[in-house]
Length: 75
Image 1 (cartoon, one colour):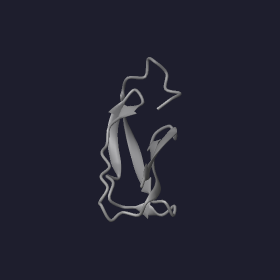
Image 2: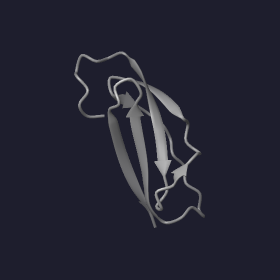
Image 3: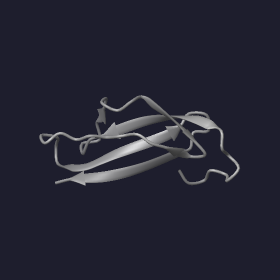
Image 4: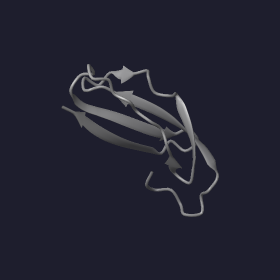
């Protein structure tokens, strides 16, 4: 996550939201993950019959509201 000060090393909680190509929230992701200094790891698996198109994972730091997102396109 960008915008995190270099000296910020304490643990933080992050809310994760996965949206499908139609913009609908998919509730297969963990509701939260833990991380330090703006870094956290979570996994996202896709099934062979998931809709094609752009999927987006948004991560929000619970205490500060900072957000980051990443997308993947299934073909």
